[in-house]
Length: 337
Image (cartoon, helix red, strand yellow):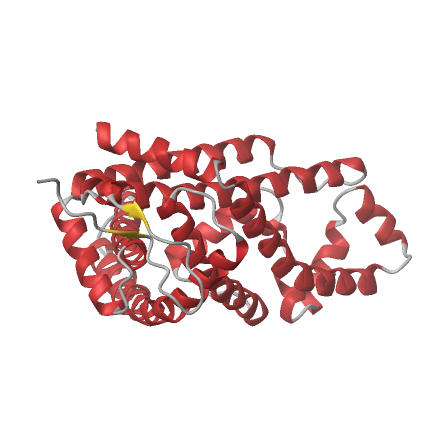
């Protein structure tokens, strides 16, 4: 337990010592979200114009206009539904993951672009947290460039694993086993409890895959591994040897994430107009910032745990990378004689 809490607190400190990383990730997130937001604004402005419906919508919800707009909208406009307002957006995303419901094509394209940018930045982020000391922009982007293609190869393996989970495994659990098990159950509550249990099983499988690939990325950076398959296999060995600290740390980070969700649920904006709309925008942006901070804390604490358990804390910091030199985070020091 001491190792788990020490790694978690060290991860928090590492993120706090690198505010530029958090600020940069937030800026990238906002820039990616800006183009679809502008497109959606144009669709809404074109539909509302200067009508009375626009005045009513500015004061709050105009249900009649919203139903008319939703029935005619296509593409990105079709995503503007009551489910995205406030905390409903969080619940809708969770439901889509557990029930394997896809997103609109426009949203999928934006999400794919954001994931590609995140894959590029993650090498520099992990390198910065592994070094646990300031690095300048050239070193950060040098590490990002070196690890980008290695992480892309890992992403191909991850895509295959998630395709297996959201394909055959999800279909067997919810389209095969669940209907078969509940076909003669007269009590709806029991069927609901079984479905909830299957959600937990599916969620546990998602967590296991997520942990495995995240530690593969950590190990690839800290040990400067070139082989994606090699990083994945050694990450599997690391998780297998240290399941309690690995999943204990994941649980601790998960509780932090739940706390952020709970706080957002309490103050999440509703569909209200006027200055409440601007207040809601501020609250939502703070939630996005908190979400990103939690994600970075997970990577930083996982890096710290990996270094602690494999004695990588005894590494001496390698020179700051200069392209095309290797951005290995540390170099193993020989044991004292």
